[in-house]
Length: 436
Image (cartoon, rainbow, N blue to C red; front, side):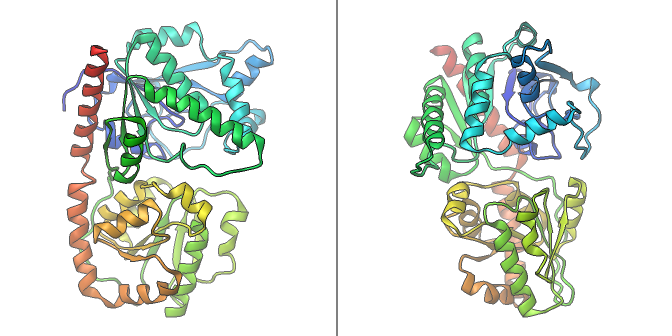
């Protein structure tokens, strides 16, 4: 897939095919590496991914500059000098203060967003070093990984205006309309200023790619964008069809367990125990907060395995009889996941395992999985035990869903199609931007 457009990605996490930023692989898998650069803020030392060069700016280094210390706020990484991809948690700033600054910034509260916004607004990041790096790369387009932080979009606008180039925004979550009334003045201030910034971004020569049709329709209508849906893809290998093992089935869940997902997983565990005390749900997540994963301790039918490398995730998923997709049922959980359609859907559909989907129908991934006709779906706690019993008993549905998973993977989660769509959108946006 030839291309000669230089795309600058602006996002939090460095582009890597085996961690939380691997969604970018559905967009740029076939892109010439030397035509992709990225500005990112995560303090981890990046590994070989799919960017020819990266520019890292961290909260910690900006904070040191704010304190008056002479320190480079930006660090350049080039592909040839990066280590091979690993699951390492090594950080470029080894001091405890740096780790503390990162943890503070990761809290995503209105106050932390405002404080981070004020720190980045000082523009200590806007250095001759950054500008020389940008001039050398000569971007044709800015590709923004949408975030609830101000600075991602401010940097994107800075680069777009400096080079007179358009912006393409990857919108995977609803950071704008996820709004509720609050007496917290920081929340109201944050929401108002964030909305003003995003309207400025969307008024700039712009297009968008969306994670689902549901969020596409809302944002295209509200902001007059011409964006398209680009489904995420998976490198998980499909296993040959097998009926679910009813004696000792391997049942797994991989991913985030916040936003009520831990409670939904716990309910699945208790339902499994009611059906057969020997049935166990294995949960794997990077969650470190005992208050979140601790609810599994009293559940004999849930085993919390913590973090495992992505290669092991794929291996376990390929061996699973059943893989689970869940969301929460509380209103605040639904607000966060109303439009979500994560890599879990693509991985599950690609794996060949029988899929159990459980959560509120208002959540994006639950609604999507129900529409695929490729999963056992339960949207009501009172029906959970019966749904799981049906999953084990209906071998005809197991086979029918397996065949439909192949169809959905080919039609929606096809990496060639996704990458071609992104290239078409970027080329169109660049050409339209030039006319303006």
